Image (cartoon, rainbow, N blue to C red; front, side, top):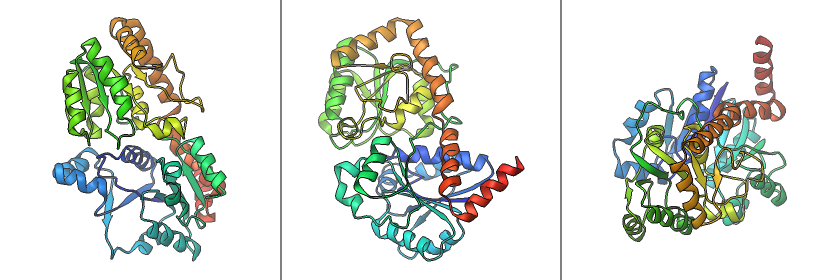
Length: 375
């Protein structure tokens, strides 16, 4: 089958974690013999910021992911031609509202493709008007990256067929690298986040790291000068943007990491961790998380990772991990086991095919049935 993904960007992962997941999904589809193409706006915010700071990034993406293809589009782009050749179209919620409606109209006026809308953000609760204004009546399926977000769509009447489709780790990329020597105690890979996690960074990263005197590094973007000063005061080295393809190597060089969720997810959309949590556990690095409510039972808290109640507790747990090799090894092994058994992009593609088998257009269902019969 031919899959078409409308994404904010596939090429750029600058402050754009959804690119990680879509790359993994597309690579999984291609490995199974399907075609996958991404379309992204030529002036997209993430892409523009990345290229302005790292002009070599486009070539790096092509070198890191040679099997992936993304076309950038402008005003004159022929979307209808691309849609006519597609079997499954997945439209991300950062897509321009007018284009969201245009794609829906193409489906309504004879489109043979199955049309899915993919939401991986908190705007459904933080900017509800922007989501309610979208024309989604012609979309066959809504994919929400957590059960609480799925319920929000159902309660608001934004879609009758809504499925929870969590993000996951690309297991062909995120894997333990035990041959790499450790260089420092702690690493955190995360963006500043529009003040959405500034308090968490102070309480769960800067405070404990400074108090323990750890060797620590931070990767991410959009840190204001005051935040950079706070990191430096705590002895934390700031290293800026990190291409996602290099993340497994960085995790391998550190003894532990932490997870700091954005405030809207903790307060309004419980049960949705950042994709970095899946990726970190896939790399078998011991992890301590700031509080969030795992209402869907995605993980085994206390076995796969540790929860810190507050900054003082984070300090205690980090000290334990760094001083207790058995504890560190147990967390690393258990977390890796959970990811490999439940939270790889292959699992999400299996789930996607199950959804398509129930809600897809006739041509898509027929192709799935033919493939199943052939197996």
